[in-house]
Length: 287
Ligand SMILES: Cc1cc2nc3c(=O)[nH]c(=O)nc-3n(C[C@H](O)[C@H](O)[C@H](O)COP(=O)(O)OP(=O)(O)OC[C@H]3O[C@@H](n4cnc5c(N)ncnc54)[C@H](O)[C@@H]3O)c2cc1C
Image (tube, rainbow, N blue to C red; front, side):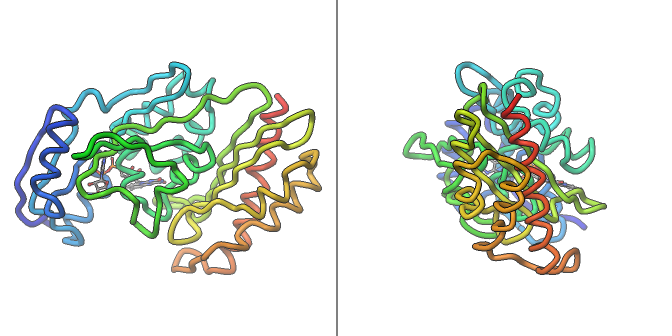
């Protein structure tokens, strides 16, 4: 299939990209790795009149760990997967990313593109929510930070304005007593999540002092599981406490069924994967 005709721009700075977005508005689409946008254009599900290819903006690439973790929007999955500093400071990120698609997808796909696309079965929305990450965006009015928890508003929909560009994702490195884990039930062909669970925990004196649980793949968008979080807080994080808390997962969530898995099956898997991710995160927090 051949996409419809479009104008093609290759800005070399964030300011230039934002000015093009402002000029063309809804007519324009940003091109990063192209792994979601190009298939949609070839199927004519998307027909932007203008493509703003951001691959020449060098400042959008790479990982900097300097007090906090900054990941440029154009950083590919393979860079994150193999980054030594991320493995030691926030292992859930490389762990999750290593489970995405295949090597070709991981060599081209970018974290900014995935978050902007907000596919309901993507892995990183749950991961950034569990890490309480901030999404840095630039628009005509300057820079703003959007908390990951406020970013995903519906299926394939975010709080990003059409004139805004994601430039980076920032989060804190994990320290002593903290642990995080991502586990998923992958679709056997695409590897997208049928259900994925991301968990962050902080232990305080042997009990769970803080916890964030996010589920992806099961509904229109990734969702925090506050009932599970409340249930595990102030417990000893034992297998019994984890099992009880995981039973609450999915309770407040709009769960969807499709040709890959029914709603009931996904609801059952949410509990299983929440339990597995909680177990792994708590084990890691214990060191
Ligand atoms: C076969 C296959 C298997 C896959 N398996 C998985 C999987 O298992 N798990 C998973 O999570 N993902 C999976 N993906 C998705 C892949 O990981 C890509 O990350 C994702 O498609 C989007 O990233 P991209 O860089 O290719 O974005 P693009 O396709 O270039 O862009 C996607 C959308 O985001 C917008 N955009 C891109 N960058 C920015 C930016 N910086 N600021 C604002 N808007 C922006 C574009 O305009 C477009 O609307 C798979 C994809 C394929 C093709």
